[in-house]
Image (cartoon, rainbow, N blue to C red; front, side, top):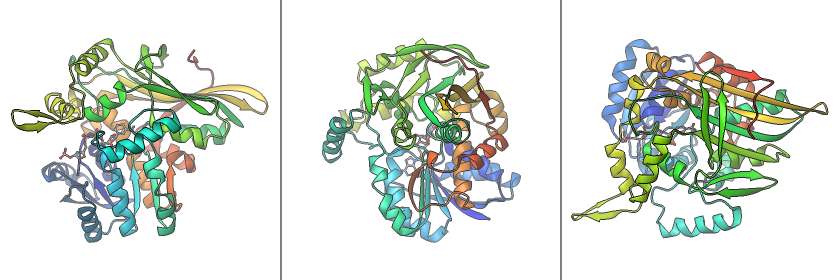
Length: 419
Ligand code: NDP
C-alpha cells in the first residue's frame, strides 16, 4: 500500500507507469505529473480500466522547486520517481528534502545549459581534478548525502538499466560469485531496427550528447580518456549476433569505481550501426548538436532542441522496431583463489515489449527497473538514510523482481571475453 508521485510522462515514464499499474499491491495510488498534462491524462485514460491502482494527474514545471514542493505537499506521496530529464534531478531532490520524501531517479544530473559560467567553472575544475570531460557526473547529487541523512530519507540514484540493472548485476556478482572482482565490461547492445535512417531510442538531446562526447574508462585508480568512438570491438551477442561496439564514458563507471573494492578496470561499450554514426558525425559537423542558443530571424533557438523537434519521437518507435537488445556485464576476478569469468545479461525483444506496454525495448528496459527501485523504496525493503547508488543495496530482491516483471537474466559462466 503506497503512494508514488511520478514526474515526467515520456518514453521511460510510460513503461514505469504501466509496470506500477501491474504492481497495485505496492502502488495503490500513483500521480503522474509532467510539463504537458495532456500526456498524463491520455495515459491515465488508457490504464485506469486495467488496474486497481488509483491514478491521478497533475501539471508541474519540475525546474521550479516551489511548484514541486506545492505538488508534493498536496499529494503526500511516500516517494517521488523522477523520470523527467537529468536537468531536473537537483530541483526534484531539493523539493524531496524540503518535504522529507524519498527520491528515485534513472540518470545523473547534467545541466541544460553547459555554457552557464557558474556551472562551467565548477565543471572545468572537475575535468582537471577527476580526469574526465563528460558534462554529467555524480558530484552534484552526492553533495546531498548529509542533508538526506539528516532528514532521514533515501535517495536511490540510477534505477534504470545502465545505470541500474548493470549496477545491480555487479552487486549480485560481488555477493554470490566473487571474492574479488578485477574487471567489469558493461556491454549495451541494441540489435533492433526501426527502419528510419536516423532516430534515437531515448531523448535525442541526452542520447546525442552522451554518444558524441569523449570516451573514457577506469583503470588502476584513474580515468583514461579517449577520442569519441576511438575504441571499437566486435562481439557476438547471445540471441542478437555479431555487432560493432564502441567504448563510451558512462555514469555507472564513476560509482562502481568507488563501490567495488579493488576493481582494476571498468569499461562500457555500446553498439552502433554505421548509418547512425555517419548521421551523427554530419549533424555534429554542421553544429546541430550544439546546446548553445543561436539567434535565427529574431528568435533564439537551441540547435539540438530544434533537431529533437525534427527527429521521430522515441515513444513512436515501438510499433516499427523489430529485433532484440542484450545488455549485461562481463566480470573477471577470483573466487576461492581461482580465476573466474561470468557474464550476466538480459535479452529483451522490441516487439514483445510493444505488445505488452506499447513501447520499444529501450524504454522498457529502463522503465521496468525504475518501477522496481521505487517499489523497493516504497515497501521499505531498501531503507537507508542518505544518497546511494543502486549497487549499495542488497541486489537479491531486485534480481527476483527483474524475473517477475519482464526482464529475466542469465548467468553464463563461460562467456566470450572482450579483448
Ligand atoms: P522523454 O523526453 O521521452 O521524456 C521526458 C519527460 O519529462 C517528458 O514527459 C517531458 O515533458 C518531461 N519533462 C521535461 N522537462 C520537464 C520539466 N521541466 N517539468 C516537468 N516535466 C518535464 O525522455 P525519456 O523518457 O527517454 O527519458 C527519461 C529519463 O530516463 C531521462 O533522464 C533519461 O536520461 C533516462 N534514461 C535512463 C536510462 C538508463 O538506463 N538509466 C536509459 C534511457 C533513459 P514533455 O512531455 O512536456 O516534453
